[in-house]
Image (tube, rainbow, N blue to C red):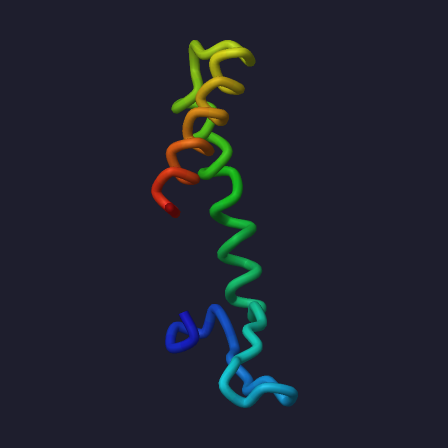
Length: 70
């Protein structure tokens, strides 16, 4: 993403092993363009699911992720 100019990378002054990443104007514009697409995809993916279904799905996925970290 740095090579494509979406982010800039600078060495962290307090720990030279780390980098500080900052989003560029090109990156910000790309996010603005993609946000409606992301919202539409989520809307399509969750179509027909009730709030209870979504809450259960979130709970189950969180549990699965937790199990994978063990």
